[in-house]
Length: 307
Image (cartoon, rainbow, N blue to C red; front, side):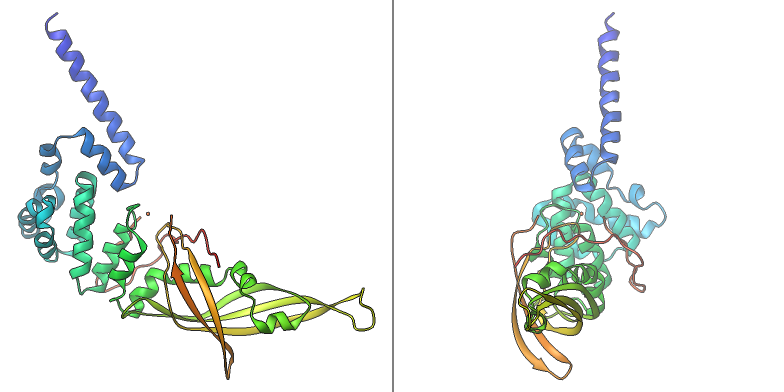
């Protein structure tokens, strides 16, 4: 009879732990880490950062992991941990950060930002940003401050899907109707917009150059009879954005922008300079090798574009 209460308590703990494991599998990693932080003691979570647990394939990588894990979990040693993190192979880095996120999520975010800010390897920055996008509090300004130093190819990988989604949104062009379309017919509307060319550039900020083909249709009032309308043939034209600031919140977050257009002529048609100002915005990483660009990745969403 004296043993029974202890056994009952032990069974209850096992049931709670089993339930926790089931719940964690259905949660984003950073959220799962917060759950685990509340239910598991520090000692157990820290033991999961051991090199032999994370990377049993290579003794050298194990030693590096064991040398940085103490710095990684102490907030005041984040920069020291970030420097050590650069010594890991890419696969070992991904495995280590997975355990950090699942056991010390707040420290993991700070470490990833410090790592990305101090890295000069675009492939590693790409991976760090993709992981950070899982965190709900990783904001627009933080991301652009990191990625503005990347090369055009990396910026294209990070932002091309969202740029296509934004520039091919007919609603954007209806709100900012080009003069040629307005003069085309009394009642004109855009029926198609497609991006023909798209390039990105870093530096002081993230910029893009895009050439967009527009197709418009409309009705015009007859000169002989004001009550009759004539269907106009479709109008096709091209517009170009010339190195405009890109302020897009990506990675399953909202992209909220307010474009302003200033017209100027060019030999290929009318060129439009687009200035975008960020507004308040509302995550699944893809691993990328240092020598090879990634293949298919989940498409970032653009839930709002207003002007």
